[in-house]
Image 1 (cartoon, helix red, strand yellow):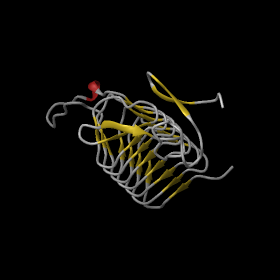
Image 2: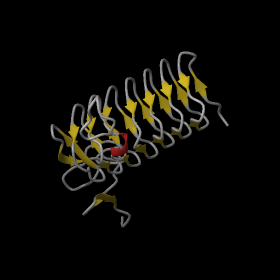
Image 3: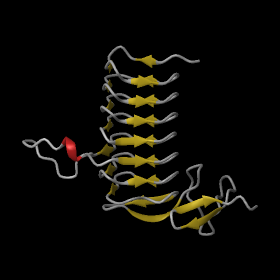
Length: 189
């Protein structure tokens, strides 16, 4: 099994769990109680908070903080300088850590550069949040959302390409069916 790589400038607190093949780069801080799966890429200046969970195969770009209450399933991409929150209405003078709202980012989702994810939402499987978007509500599976607040403008394939109106991917030829939770891969063909 590949070993874990931790750059000499990074800090990994005792009690953090890191899977094999994961690479942690310059100036990162992995806090106690955090769990990182195997084969992840943790970019420069990333903080993984206590009790945060990162699945396997995730890529977290530079300058991202993954706070307590955030769960990333496998193969989630976090773009540079995107933001998670975990307290809806924080105050510096009042401790509200008992009010952490959990955030779930499902398998294969992409969170674009500089987007903000307001705590308490779920980002669906293979959804794509556009750069700079502010997500204030749940995002359906395979949805493409942009803006402030983020609104759906289309659908994306598992390969990351925008789907045609007929829900077929021009890049990989997969077809999808729309459900109340977003899209599902069409296995009938």
